[in-house]
Length: 406
Image (cartoon, rainbow, N blue to C red; front, side, top):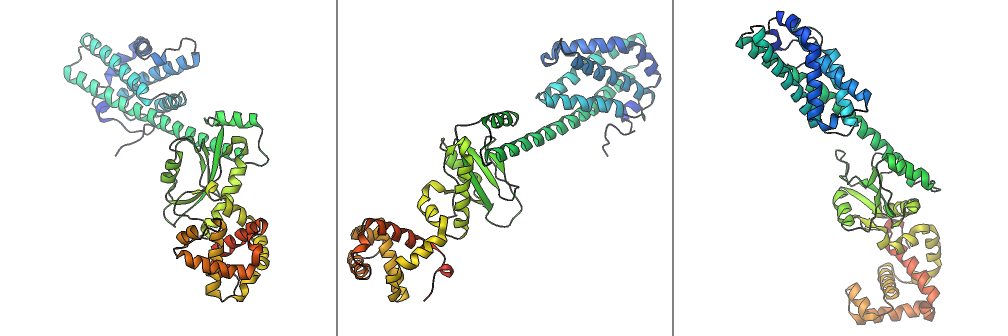
């Protein structure tokens, strides 16, 4: 079973090294530490910091601590690893905070181990150390190297996880700030955007969404420039430069498991306006009024969004404007309503309306004649045409349960 570096658990190779070697090696540790530090600083450019006294102190502490711990373990293989483990966890933490790869640290540790082995090998002749014992020392050095590398990795991983958590928290705060009403001060946005590592774009679009089905939660895979918070009560995103190349395809792919409404493109300082329209679209999609099988682009559905903005008012007006149709039996009434809506949308072009409704043009003309008898010439007046189109859109696209019955 593998144990952590802080536990009292001997390494098998160290248990095989004669304990008297601890006393032999101890007087040479200071000189060996200096040699290791010089070679590490010379061989690893990233660690060459003549002006950074604190970093130099940490490097020295790591090298000297590792050497003392190694010699102590030769004397007592069961002694605690925690002192050196804490140092190497701190080093791993510092490496992550510096933004360096863990490879740099591991290279430096291998370089230091090579120097130590070279010195131990040279001293073996002076102390008449047998080849078998020397081989045991070599095995112990590299086993020890594995353990301190594991401690450094623990610190590195913890720091990266915490850093990612801090960055994610800042990005969520930035999203809230950008979507706030009234808009936040530009300087406040710029300052938080810098901390969140987000470049403030010229334009944005908001997206609101909900999952299509109940399934194990799977957040969408989005590029880092998209601000997202899918764990809030109203999951939403903010997409920079939404008209840019590939943006639409990216959203379609990332949000395929979600019903999503994309608000109109606005200036970044107007992000809340885009959010408001996306919020209007999503309930209409859930009711089946807007298509939800793909990304809902509000800019493509503005007439429906405007008409349904005050659905109650439109329905009240519909009761008056559509009153002439009450005398027609229900099934034929709906056909006349759909014909009238299509006529209004296509400039009363019978051929185009027939194509849209999949009927013969003569059928359209017959129905149009009936509509003229019901509404009279006022049907062609511009103001009434606009009202009729609005009320028919709501009346015909709402679920049947919402429509008035005879």
